[in-house]
Image 1 (tube, one colour):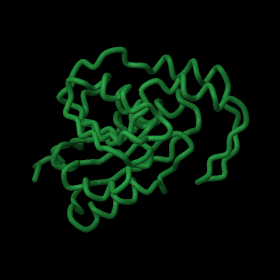
Image 2 (cartoon, rainbow, N blue to C red):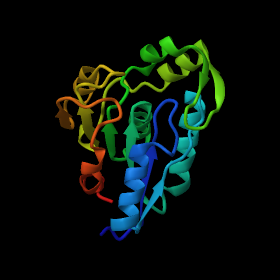
Image 3 (cartoon, rainbow, N blue to C red):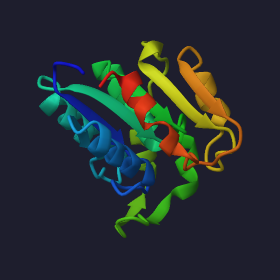
Length: 195
């Protein structure tokens, strides 16, 4: 086990919350098998710039005291890639969004988060905020492990396979955007993140 305290930062996706199934799987696994790992699953603001600022503040607050590893799901994968570009933290990406600024154009207007019931309006300004967070090329491909299922009904899986082509990849046939049978992976994720 690492001598430095370790933290797992789980970054949920668009219109998700800390109650996401994958976040709960990771929390439960760590409680049972690795209670030494501090698990943080922040409830992200609905808007990209505010979400990125919250994540940056969490990392700034804890990076001196903890070895931090990231899991990013969907839009959380996009934000994790941005965080990595600033802090070189290891990341496991689960069906990550690669071009959310294209995808979310279809969602402009009123939104309701199904987990939190929070209502808000997604605007062109927020699409611009997403573009600002884009990482054009991956500087440290060894920092990433892509977990991708081909039958993701929300995202084109090929975008992630291409973007992270120099990184470790596990690409599965079938599945969906939620990443079916994610509970197979917690131990391997902790091992990859070296927590």
